[in-house]
Image (tube, rainbow, N blue to C red; front, top):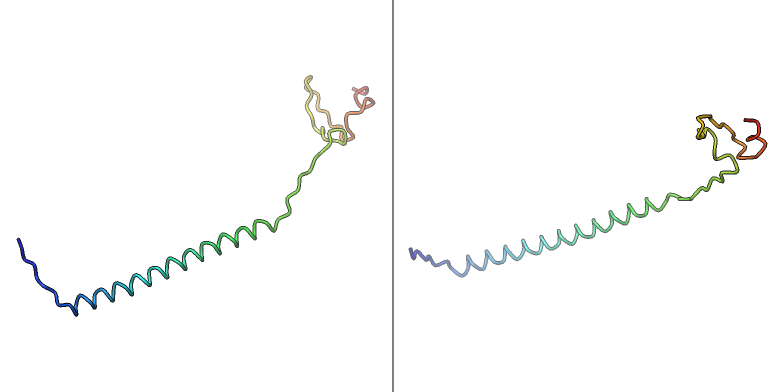
Length: 90
């Protein structure tokens, strides 16, 4: 079981030098990937923040009850609001 074969130092040194170059390349690729990920996220955040978001409040007295079906089943299509005059007509 002890088939230990000796490897010359020159071959070992060449292999280790090749591994060092491979490790440097992999570290370079990881750094580039992290920079690309950061740049991609910044681009999406920039595009997302280009939209102007606003809230719109509709006052129920200004016609927010159009096509409201009341408790009696009558469709209230009053776009002017809940004035007492329009309620008296019904």
